[in-house]
Structures are given as structure tokens and as C-alpha cells.
Length: 341
Image (cartoon, rainbow, N blue to C red):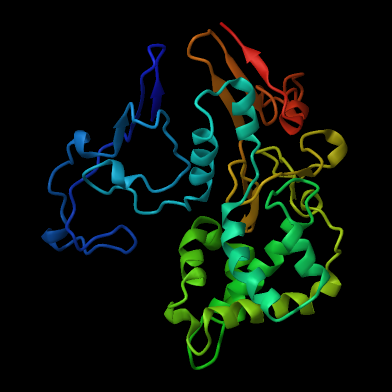
């Protein structure tokens, strides 16, 4: 929970009951239920869970990242990457005062710290070779924002995919999972969606054993060449909005009804990516298209009554209600409405 009041207090508190477990258990593997060593040994005191009250920096940021450092125990065992949280912290720290307008702007921030880390490795390597290519030029001139009209975001994602295959998809004697496995994990599961920071840590580490017979720099170069070999099949003018769109389907009928009946939406382009404050991830999991994107944007001014909101759809799930998709256009355009008692 992130909490604020109108007396300038802010706080973060993890809730829930955390059982005391043996040190041999981490939550990622089955536990032998017949072994009493794995029995619960009581419940952790909630005072020891991650928490923060009126931190000196004056703000609290949480974006599914690891906040175990705020407690005496470590209940969070599957955090997502910290790129989004660090970008939010960066923006908040640049000014002492923030208002509704600056918060709305932060809601739509699509700058990628992840892309900067990878391009800070790749671009100097390419420049050292004296390479001249349209792909390199586009990546160098990209502002690292996943805007709907960005072409750099499209190219970076293609390179990033190629690098993942290069590092983890080898099928030679040096190890690797095989290209088919990586393709399946990328296209049909949420493995790389949920754990991308773990894989990034490997790909950015010069001494990772996953590089086996090659160096990190060689892997980056090989991935770029592999990406270039398919560049002819990539429209250099393709934008992120064209590549990254999702249809909002009625939960009951799941896209099985004709479009003219109005239960579903046309394809909607999503700004942002996996590592930007405004997320825009689209992926398949269990044969079903799903996404990470803000279903509602909400701003509360603690000195006033009311909320500024932006809802992906409408407040009614009844297709024949005028409120079924009443807020969709405003959500797409980033227009907020005021909710008051």
C-alpha cells in the first residue's frame, strides 16, 4: 500500500501474512510436504515487512520492483525490473514541486533506461568498426522514447530479440537452450515479459558464463549483424504504434463475435514498452493475447476533494449501456476527467 494524507504524511507498507519458512525454500520449486523442516514456523511480524514512512527524499516509488531493502525480511521473490521505478525517481527528483499536469506528463513518460544501457554498449562497438548503416544512424538519433511514431523503438526491439537469441539460443556444445526454445518462450509465454531484468543482467555482464566461447562485445556485434540480415524485411519507416497495438475484447465473448456488433474495439496502439513508466507490453500467454498497460490512470490532490482519472473503456460492462466505452477515446488521447462526491 502507498498511503498519503492531507497533513503531508506519506507511507508505504507491505500487507499480508508472511509465514516463516526454512532457509532452504525460495518459492520457485515444490517443497517436500512430508518433511517437517518445511513446515511454517509462525508468521513474520508485520513491522519487519518492507515499509517506509516520510522518507527524506519526499516521495515513494513502487513499480513492481524489488523493495525488500525497506524491510527486515525479504518477501518479494519475483520482482520485475527497476527501470521504470528509476525513471520515475529521476523525474520526481528533478523538481521540488509537482502538480496534476506534471503528474499527467509522468503517466505518459515513455523514456527507456533499458534501451540506453544496451545502446551504450552497442553503438561504440559499431562506431569503432567504422560501420555506416541506416540502422546504426537511426539508433544513434533515437531519443530512447517509445512514442507511437517512433521508428527507433522498432529497430531496438528487433536488435534486442536478436541478442537474446544470440546469448541464450545457442545449440552448440557450449550450452544454450536452442533457438526454437527461445522463439517459443518469446512468442508464447510471459517468461521474458516477467523476468526481463534477470536476462538483461546476463546480457550486460561482460563476465557472464552464458557467453561461453564468445565475449559480450562479440555477442552484441553478432546480434546486430543477425538483425541487419533481416532488415530488408523490416519497414524502416514502421512506427511503434503500427507494431504495438492490441484489441480490447469483451471478457465473456473473447473476440468471437463480429466486429460490427460493437462488443470489441478496433486495434488500439499502445505507447511505451516493458521498461518505460507508461508500459505498453503486448504478448501471448497460454494462447491468449494479453498486455501490460495502465487500465486506469489516477491522480489525487490531497488538498482538494476529487480525483483526476482516465479509464481504459467505461464504467459499465454492459455492451448496451452508453457507459460501455464512454472513456476509451479519452484514455487513448490522455484526457482526464474529474470525479467528485
